[in-house]
Length: 340
Image (cartoon, helix red, strand yellow):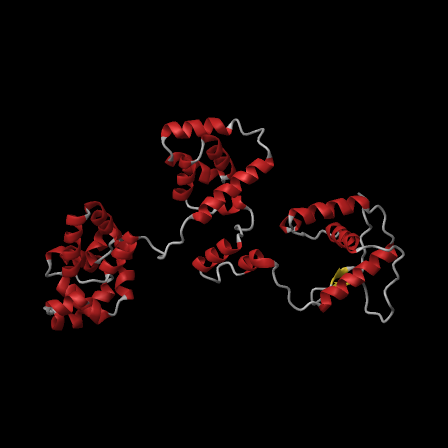
C-alpha cells in the first residue's frame, strides 16, 4: 500500500476538527480527483493511520470493515491537492456536528448499559430480538468461576475446551481446579485438539454461550438469600437471632449453618479480627455507646469473651478516657445493653 508523506502542518485541531495548517482566508485547494464518499473515508482512515492514530475499526460492522478494506485496496495514488480538499471537507463536517445517537435499539442499549435496570434492558432486548452486542468472549471472561463452571459442565468436552482456551491463564487454571478430575483431564486433552478450529466456529461458540447467559432470569435481589438473612440477623437482638436460628435448624439445617457463617456480631470479634485492629473498632464507635455495650457484654456468657478481647487489645489512652463512663454504666439494663 502506498505510504503518504507526513504533512507537518496537519494536526488535530480544536472542537474535534482537523487543522490543515495556519489560519488563512484562502479557500482549500480544489480536488483534482472526483472521489465518492467511500473513497474519501478510505483517504481519511489511511491518513490517520499513517499519522499514528489508533482507530477502533474493529468496532465497525463486518460489512463496513470489508467495504473499507476493499476500497483502500483500490485507491492507488491520491494527489496532494485532493488529499487536502478531502481533509478540509472532513474537518468542516466534524465542526458542524452537534450530537450523534446510536443506531437502532442495539446501539441504544449499549449506550445506556448500566444506566437502566437489567430487567428493562433484558425485556427490550427480547422484544426487539437483539443479542448482547460486543465481543461475547469479553463478556464470558468477566463471568465468575461458578457461572463458568456451570457452562463447562453442561456443554460438550470440545466446547468446554474452547471456553478454557479463551479464558485468561489464571482464570482457566482456577476453573480447571474446580472441575471434577476426570472431566478436567478430558477437557485438557481436548485443548490439544483445538489447533485446527476455525475462527468463525470459535465466534459461534462464544455467541452461543453468551446467549445462554442472556437467557438466565435477572435476579430480583443483588445478594443471595444467605447474605440477606445474615445482614438482617446482624441487626436483630440476640434473643430474636437465636430464636430465628433455632427455627431454621428445625426447617433447614444446612441453610441455618450457612447463615451462621454469614453472621458477624459482637460475639464474633475474637475470631474475626486481629487484636491489633481492636483500636480501630473502639475509635469508630461513640464512647458512651461502646462503654454501655461493653458493660452489658461482660455480664453475658456469650459476649463476655468478646468484651474482654476488646478491652485487652484497646489502647491505654482510650481506656483512661472512658474510665469516667464506666461506673454509671457498670450495670446497664438488659434492654439498653442489647440495643447498644
